[in-house]
Length: 514
Image (cartoon, rainbow, N blue to C red; front, side, top):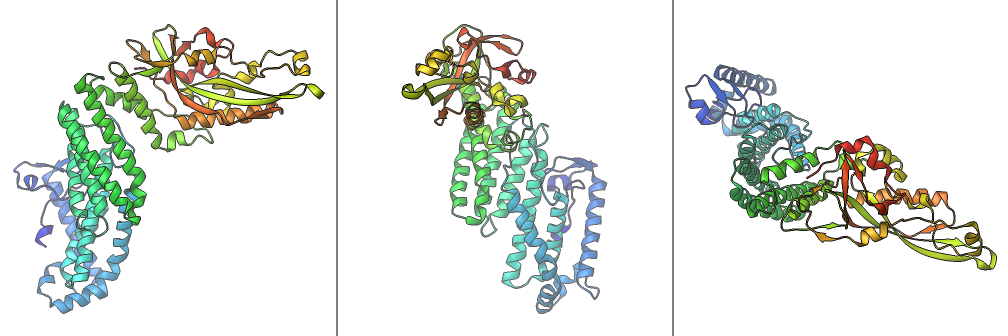
């Protein structure tokens, strides 16, 4: 029981560091959750927990057995007590904690600086996990045979690691200085614990990598961009190796998505630091703060568009666009159309091929048409545009082809759509630097653009029975020069009659400019 004689944090249940225990200060600070408390309160909590453990053992093992007596009990008697009284009582909880750990590991466990992440949902508190860990330690001497001793030691490691991960999840919601240093320490300890658990070695490797990534975040916050880049690069390599190991461990494959997100976060952190050092971007903290703004946007809740708020995977593409814009300020490029204006507005360039039947009787024939449609890449901010795709884009079918009745009868129609000068405008796009112009950040992904244009095609087909559509192609992002009246862009003349309604909606006030 000597391992139990220590001060414990009254807020999370974690054992306090020896430095805190040996200090003469009336206050102690938990290095796992970061809270400061009076020493007497930490001592009172420890005494209370010890009393609860003795009570728990007394109920489980009748006959006045006490924690202090364990070492004096014959090994055979200890084994019988463990098998008859302790093992049936703890086995179920051990399985629950192991399952809870692997479930929690299916979620991303870190955030970038300036980001207040959403904590993972746990079925236990860190206090419960640390207290169960203490109960396991209290009965550990009863597990005298190799198999049971291995099982209970493994359970101790699992519950300790799980409790530390819960504490880190709480720290995700804070922006106080030093949180990344605490998270790094917690991840390192959790990794050491799980490295001794059979079958959980890939998770241990992942947590070890996350410890490095948290150190990298702490470095960039303290102005050490070189150290940040080097640590992030090391962490990325460790995470990619952990991913390979996870793929070879079927019971842990639920972690793959989370690992992919964490690898992307590592690459973003490294990219921000590298860009600042090379002069190709803003300062690293400015870039990270901008990325946080993009990641923190609250999108409208519209049936069928749950991915806007429910999938972190989309952040990878959005962040890549931010990094592309920042880099394009000096060494890189983005696709910019010709034209004047101090602002570049992002649009999805969509290639649409369709055919329609025209003429009557012997003049009847099928005409094939190719059009360009432009979709503002900020359309995801507007609930009305998500519900009604006609509001979101250059509505070429509402514009019509300008054919006369005689053309339709004679089969002389060449089009039933009106693309104005959109095709000429998109054809002018070329890789260029934005220079000093402001750039509006794209807030939609290629997949979301494809979904909206698909909805538009369904609507257009329902309005015109002779229309036959091929699958539209979302080709690329292009940036169109314009001037801004508040949040409303004044677009070039090529949009004549095709100005997307969504751009004038009040929800567009939430756009982000670099």
